[in-house]
Amino acid sequence: MTGILTNFTGRDALLWGHQPLKLTYGLGDHALFSRSALIRLIETYPRAHYSLIAMGAKDDSRLWQEGDLAGASGETLLAAITEGRIWLNLRNVSGVDPAYRRLLDAIFHELHQTFPGFAANKWKSGILISSPGRGSITMPTCPASYCGRSRGARESGSIPAARRS
Image: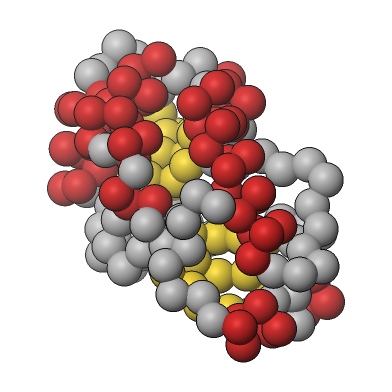
């Protein structure tokens, strides 16, 4: 077991897949989520697999503009995200970078070991880096979703397929 989950209980194992759960994990401490690793990832990420979005003013959520890194350094982009209403969606990170694939495989191995009956035959992941406190949305995908964050509160949740519409 990789020990990524930090506070699950036997009750969580029984409820998994039946109701939304809030668990904590230690991915924020993993080397792949360090600032230097994220900078390297950003600077080498293929254009076809990311979206860089600048959101409009706080009261105008309809005004979003998509941008391009255009050779900007990862450090510059992370600083801009920290200061502004910007988010970067690195899609299919587990398909782009083998190190993140190995981590995702370890996460799903732990989920299979921890939660009896957990079934997932295929999985992929992305990384969303968004401005802190600026408000961002997370949309689940089917048939099951697992959403988490590596900075801030480091919480994750599962959303049972039967409860989503």
